[in-house]
Amino acid sequence: MPAVYAVAPPPPIPDGPVTYSSVSYDAPAATDIPAPDAATAPALPAAGPITAASSEQRGYVELNAYTSNYQVRGMGVTNSYSDHGWSSIRGSYTLRNRNLFNRGIYQRIGGELGIIWDAANYLGDTPMWNLHYGLGKELFPNLKAELGYTMHRGGLEGGLAKWQGHVPHRFTQDLNFTLTFNDHQRGFFGHALMGVGIYGLTGTFFDFEAGYRLTDILSRGNYGFDLEVSGGIAPSLGYWGGHVEGIDAYRIKAAVAPYSKLGKFGRDAKLYIKPWIQFSWAGSNKSKIRRAMHSGAIDDFQTTVGVEGGFTF
Image (cartoon, rainbow, N blue to C red; front, side, top):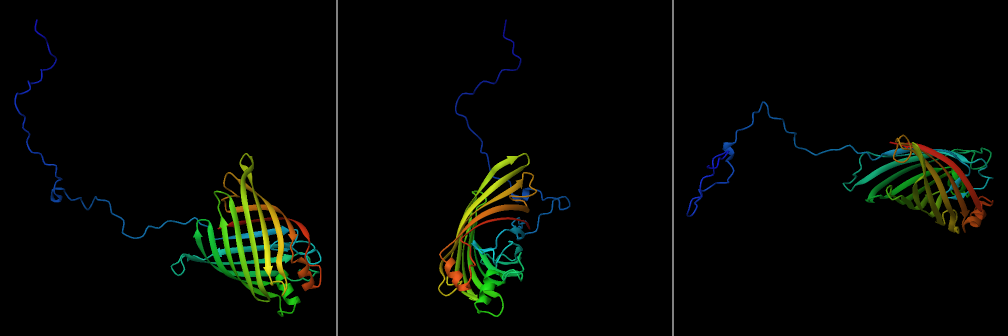
């Protein structure tokens, strides 16, 4: 019985050479493609620069609710000049033009208003304030440089300038240069400051600080705590007096930074609060400043506690 196929068998392969017809792979001419209907075609955006909103903060307002000792760059003033601590409010704002002279330079203005809580002593009988203007630039990621001008009224600087008869009022002025580093990802931060007094008190002063931020030292539910530890040293050359050259103070500081995992405060949130404790030791300039002021103005050692908070915008 012959075989039965479900489909017809393929044709037999022909004998001899196989020839192929020419095939063109060229794309069709543009004239062969129909033009889109202008009524239904989507409109293309107009040419121009692409802009994006910036999330970088422009400024901050910070309240030093209370600090148990009045200090200048870690140098502690004795209770005879600051018996009940001090409080202050400070702020800073970066102007909108951050590309001054087409060099990526920004302008920053800032200030502080403070009160020493002892109106009966020489430093506390009048409020203190300062105003600052600076030109800055980000040199590298997380590293900024700023050249600025600061005017002080009152406080240790203004009080000493008037005490020594350099100025009729408690005013001082200085030029300053600052390098600031803050690496939020790795946790390192610090600054290097050099200032030159140009009115009231003349001479040079410095402040160096380095620190590290430990994250999640304690975490419970929606809340947690970070810890910031830092150390600093503040030298000066002739700033407090003609022969006052050396170290003003050494300090170490620990600050607790609570945060909410919901982003309401702390870390990258706009609102923050930070209690802290600092230990300060007077340097070699202590006795020289005492002689310049004819009094024991500087403590050998101080333990200072404080709490500050604020918000960024």
